Image (cartoon, rainbow, N blue to C red; front, side, top):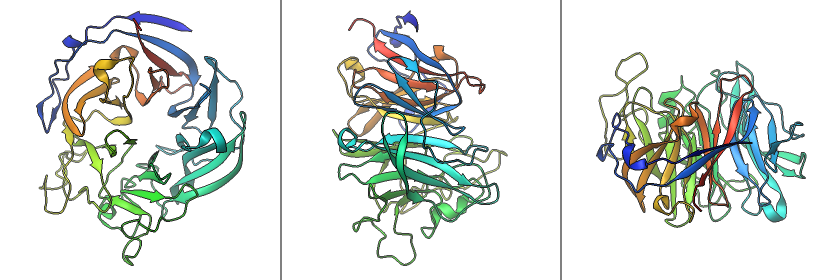
Length: 379
């Protein structure tokens, strides 16, 4: 295990190239000294991370393997029983989440792409983890209709206090106008029970013009979603096109605007919409231009870094760092750039039960992705 002590005066670091709803992203923050440690390497495009009650960790690899980290070592044999994935473009094995009652039911949830280049979709499955394999694997949700693009799956998951599951579903890239159509799953966040049934209190369950799983819509490609119990809030980040990355507070039956309103432009440089706001459509809590490519997200609750308690941390796929948003409850303040010394695309970030932050970096894509631990130096 490589241990590199990095005492960093975070007062010096500010993200001045981004502009959000709160103005220029400069930051004056209390410093936190941290130590950055490489936990394991040799991961093949790691995508999602789940930390088990006993300290073991499950890491999903986009290429289709679920890996087990135990006692600081990557177990050579992948977890057995993982369904076959459609591995192409942005598709593959994506998020991994534990059931809130994992300690008693051992249920693990996976999001993955399934199908072919001509017809593929996002699917969520669950199975019982026995320490080496998944058993009794069953489908919990599958997005409809199928699409012919290997892009914009969404695929992040989080549980609510009633044990219902929220899943982000991307707009499929070429299907962005359908994000305003509740009769499909493109560009939505869906809510199902932990067994995959439609909750009776879903907002569109009695609407014949909508799919009953839809919880919110008007999204582009949300690659992080978390529930914070302290504020009873669902936070979500969303990839913009060129500009227009968003941090949102998600509520049921709300329209988040894509592509009718956006703070970004198309990759070609052309305008997507002349509107950044419109009646009946939600504004982001914060947005960024240029885009930093938000992926994983955690809201830190812990004593190890007291100055960061309650703040949001998001990994960047573009600038290879972590963006910390200074939060006051549900109010977003200014930003700070952290952990750029990793120097790789950062895919996911989680808070561990030990108060440390755990980060997945992709490496160069040749099975050299890594899992990192950020711990307080003097605690």
